[in-house]
Each structure stands twice: as C-alpha cells, then as structure tokens.
Amino acid sequence: MQRSTSIVLSSLLIFCAQSGMALELSSPDISDQTRMAKQQEYQGFGCDGENISPALSWKDVPPETKSFALTVYDPDAPTGSGWWHWVVFNIPADTRALPKDAGNPARKLLPAQVVQSRTDFGTPGYGGPCPPKGHGTHHYHFTLYALDVEKLPHGENAPAAQIGFFINQHKLAESTITGLYSR
Image 1 (tube, rainbow, N blue to C red):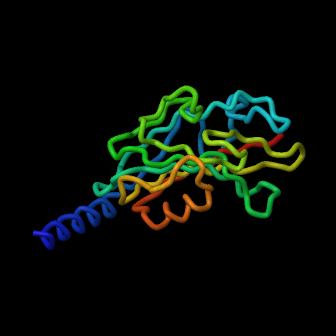
Image 2 (cartoon, rainbow, N blue to C red):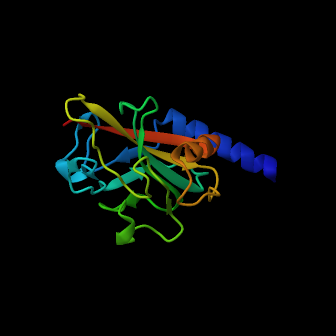
Image 3 (tube, one colour):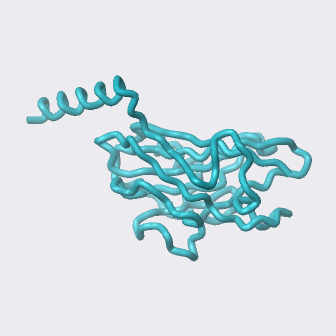
C-alpha cells in the first residue's frame, strides 16, 4: 500500500512539474520588483507608515502540503545579516490567503494555530519596510513555503533564523514576491 501511494505521489509531482504548475504567491497590494506603498511602511524607528501587512494569496499548492510558513526578509539592511520583518508559520494546509493587516496580532485575523514569531523589531507580527534614509532601495522578499509538517514546534519568541532552519528542513515548494522600498 505504501509503495503504491509513493508511486501515485511521484507521478503527480512529475505531472505538476511538466504542466508548469508551481506554488504561486500573489497580492493585490504589492507587485514583484515594484515600490511598496507607504501603507506598508513600519511605524517607529523613525518611520511613519501605517504598518499594514499586504493581502496575500496563493495557488498551485503541492498535494502533500501539510502547512505553510511565510517570511519577509530584507537582505539590504545594514546589519551584516539582513532584517526579518515578518515570520508566520503553522498556517493550515487548506488556507489560500491572508487578509490585509493579518500581521497585526491585535486584529486576530489569522487562524488560532498560526504563530507570528519575533521579528528583528523585537516583537511578533508584521514590521513593514523602514530602511535608513538615503540608503538606497531595499528588497523585501515575501516568501511563502509549502511544508511537509502540520506544525513547527516553536512559539512567538522563537528567533527568525531558527524558524528559517526548520522551514528549510521541511519545505516542499516556495514562491516569492519582492517588494522595493527606499526613504
């Protein structure tokens, strides 16, 4: 029985690869390689945006997906290690979208089992772009991961790099939208 299940899954994966199906992340609020809106900018650290996370949706999910994770990372931050702006995991496998402002923990727009862990701003939830003035254009990688586990065993105080390690151990597929921002 296990061998036939493996054969069916392998055949389905080959079909998906040949038909061009691949996990696809999209948003009505941000577009790949275009400037993000002031609405998404962080509020604090000298920035005065609204700190509203964009609405996101996805399709063409691998059939063996058991959960999703989402990260937002700025490799251009002048820290030597980049900056984590949002880390979300344990998103149920049947979820296909996050609403606008889902990154605000006070709004409670995410399913109960979803965890938003600590960002480099020091708190859980979405922290929008806030590059130093005059530092040029920064790239904000919104990356959705399909995972082969229902749950990562971490809470909201887990550091982003640790979550990233576990995401990479369990990812089946990923899709990225890169927003741009400068001040």
